[in-house]
Length: 144
Image (tube, rainbow, N blue to C red; front, side, top):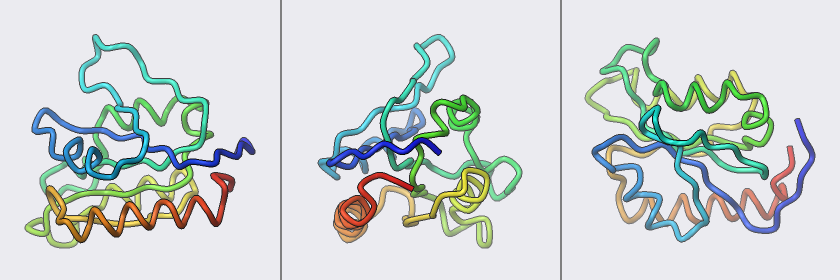
C-alpha cells in the first residue's frame, strides 16, 4: 500500500440515482469525490488516501452487495492503493445481508470497516461518521 500522508480526510463515494448516499456525504462537510454512476462518465482516478462510502446492493444477496461501479473503481490498482477504510449503508430489512458490502470490501482491500448506517442515515449517524473519520485520520494520518 502506498504511503501517503494527507492532513485532511478525504471521501470517495458511490451514490445511485436515488442520491441517498450523496445526501448523506454532503452533510459530512469533508472533501468528497463521486464514483461515476454511468459508464459514459469519465473514470475517477484518485491520487490521495480516502475513506470509501457506498450503499449495499443486491436485495439481500451478498454476492451482489457491492455496486458494479465500486467494483470497477476498486479494480483499478491505483485507486485501490489509496483506500484506507470503508463505510456502508444498507437496509435492515435484508437481515444478515444488512450492509454486507462493507465486510466484503474491507476483506478484499485489507482495510477496516469503520461504520454502517441505515438508508439515509440519521443526524446521529452523520455526527458519528464526521467525528469518526476525523479521529481515524488524526490517528493514522491517512497512512496504513
